[in-house]
Image 1 (tube, rainbow, N blue to C red):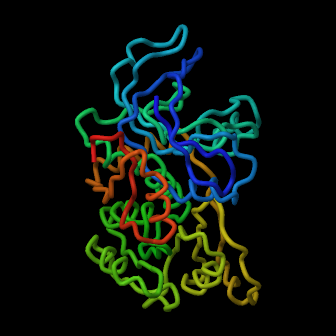
Image 2: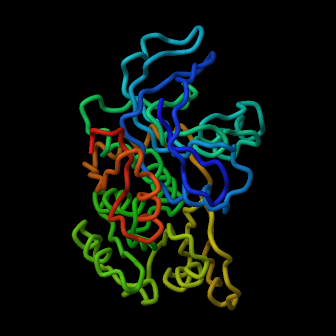
Image 3: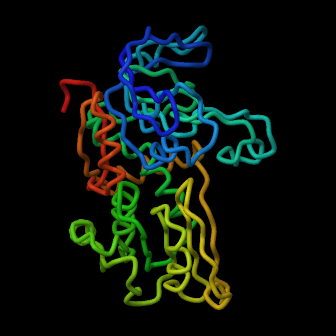
Length: 331
């Protein structure tokens, strides 16, 4: 198999050839059709997230076809299209797992971080953490749903039922969950980089009520705001934008430090919450909602060997929607 491998934090990914991995009991092996590139991959590669498995194959938005299963596995899975997300395995025994909060598991494995991921032609995954996907859909279009979509959905659930939703950072997750919000009859207010006219147009084209720079005030008080950009200074800005009793959700796994702010910004029973990982129930809910809402992902495909270019474009804010790696010959 061919893979793009991180040998050292901060270094480029290296193209290598490896033997095909063998699935153990409870695992499956996939022939990868597509793997989206996430900002979390940048956090892993840049060292913002500590203690990754090294050497590491990044990537946690995997779409592929099951080729084989481990000992005593369900051979009926062979030939199915499945998706593999960030949460790759949980202990199933800690207090969080027993309380249906497996996203907070004390001893998890994460795809593309503490176990090898999908920047490759093949991958091994825990069969219980791989989800059946539409066999007739475009795998490149499906890939961003496996993290951008799932984290967006969990963030939206945490945001509550408010009608006016602000979204800070209009990238892969935002463009998916904005479509869900609009389908639900909510109003979306998109906050982009101040000088990013393309992102503003993109948000408005998707149906956002308003789009402006993150340095601009909201045109009306928001019921809730979701922050996808990893920028701590957006927290006080979002708290100022929501009404009394409103909620701000931090949807990223990493964020720069939140600056000191006056208590008055937070007062008025405003709430600030974070989102961590996902649960399998989130996936079951979201894939059904995405189908009903007719979510269409906007993607830019890159050959697998161009993974470093995809990461560089994502870091520079040059990707509209989501970047997706595909095996050569499919771009």
